[in-house]
Image 1: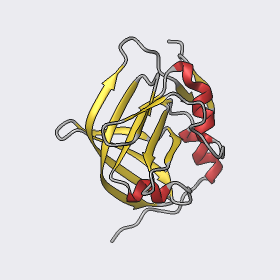
Image 2: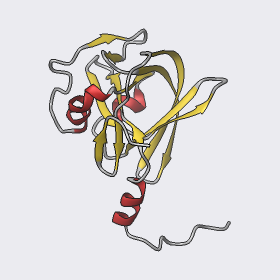
Image 3: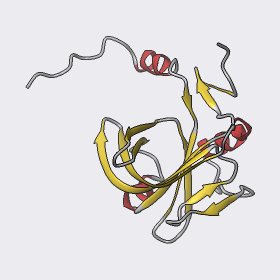
Image 4: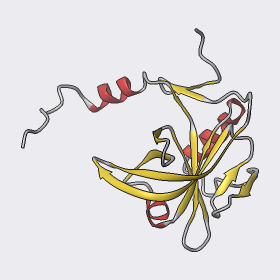
Length: 166
């Protein structure tokens, strides 16, 4: 079998190049087996299929929340609005209770749905693939909603933006 050549760049070079791809910002939420709420900020989100409706996101293998997402049956992907910059930072931090004082509601499958998100995908945890230092999660979307006219939060070059000039 043919294999890829060894990288001709450093990890820092790779990270800098990836940072040039502007993305939306999501918070992925779920419940542990004991009902505890978990969530984290992620920009590794993408569509996979319209029929069936599938999306994907990835999580570092070293993440403390990996067991909750790997073992749980459902999660919610909340696409953040431009007004939710502080929420993105909170869920990206090591804060003990990321949900403290956060407006949310119970999703149909039990995963927390964040109020004010521009879109939400409530997903069945369909499959997982271990690749490199991450696990790729594929979710089958059971419900989705969108807030018409809302402005999404954008991440580019290590910074948050509410809009990019043309």
